[in-house]
Length: 100
Image (cartoon, rainbow, N blue to C red; front, side, top):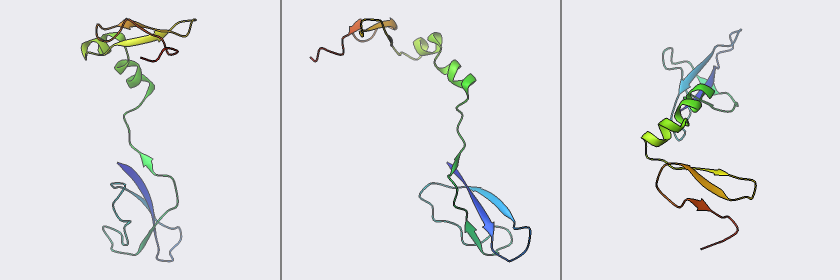
């Protein structure tokens, strides 16, 4: 779920800023969840809390993990064709220039 930034609109300086994790289709908050002061959503791109790190990606795409989960892996060679290098499902070769 995205994390949105909100500014408290009460005229105090420095302006209080807080973040709330909300569904993307939830309406914006109009008041602070604790103090009930008026708030306005900041115009920033939403921050997504994802579990995508390079280390996690390497683990999930390693050949052993792919094979354990039943995936096949294809690699492109210099001719432009794809050959199955992992798994036993699907064709052994895919030629992108030939449509079946």
